[in-house]
Image (cartoon, rainbow, N blue to C red; front, side, top):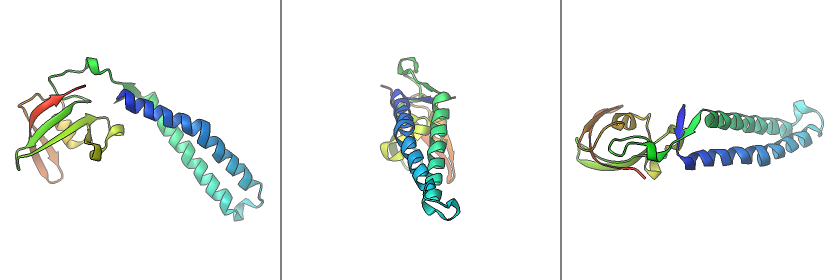
Length: 155
């Protein structure tokens, strides 16, 4: 079971709809055109169309499974005093006194450039359930990070 924000759930649903209603019919049409050109064993256009069809079907199935096994998070039901999914957490790395701020999200929403880390990442997992002032220890490839939680925000 994966938990998604309403925004990400809607994005995935929109991509799935686009693939099913727009992309797949075009791919099928291109495959039929390439197939009509004769010998399939020597037809690069046909092989490319088959690859595209396979990728499209694979992506559709993946998105269907994500939506099937996902639930939209109700932000009102989340605790405000502890780090949880959709929390924006500011913390200090105690080894070098660097302050960082990240939003804890599902793996499907992770985007480091946008300041979103997965709850399944070492840092995200270590922060989960902690309160302001507590210290979380995250085991990362370079060792163990000690992180003091400075603030928690939740929309």
